Image 1 (cartoon, one colour):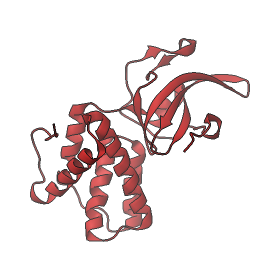
Image 2: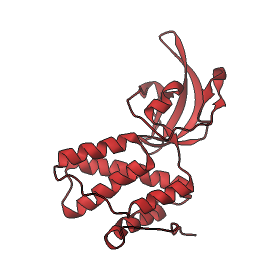
Image 3: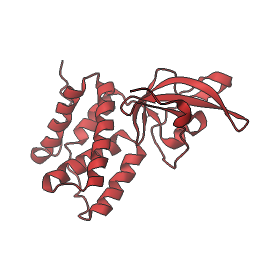
Image 4: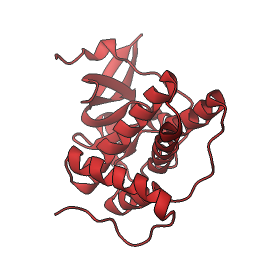
Length: 208
């Protein structure tokens, strides 16, 4: 499938706060301080894991701005993110291995029951999903995974679960250096442990 042209995929700011925006910056084009470099892999909340292709100047309505050109492989889409709006959008780097292991253990920890009203439950999980944090995505996956074992999820919740799971799995692949099937096995293993041992300690058993 051909990659979409950048002008068909302009992204505009949404009110998505984040606690994960990187502190270190470097000087990009136009002398602008940039948090990400070309070839960096990043997480775009609600969209997926992508790679910064380049940092480019684009002119719209006689105004020249600096953009991150990010390719999202899962959706085969290239998006332009204004450098000045990346933090507001919640775009962040892939977590380190230690944080990834913590997120996996989080899947098997005890948690409060989800609201029985699926619309209320959906809104709670949607807000977590939009925030884009690794533990927020893990919370959505854990909540909806266990709910689906009790009763089939409504279509909207199923789509939310699939999206959260995909982004979580993709980030784990990069953070742990593993292939998708290996990560899928880890995720399901930790989700299933919740029944037997809600508190998990130690390190993650990573193949190889």
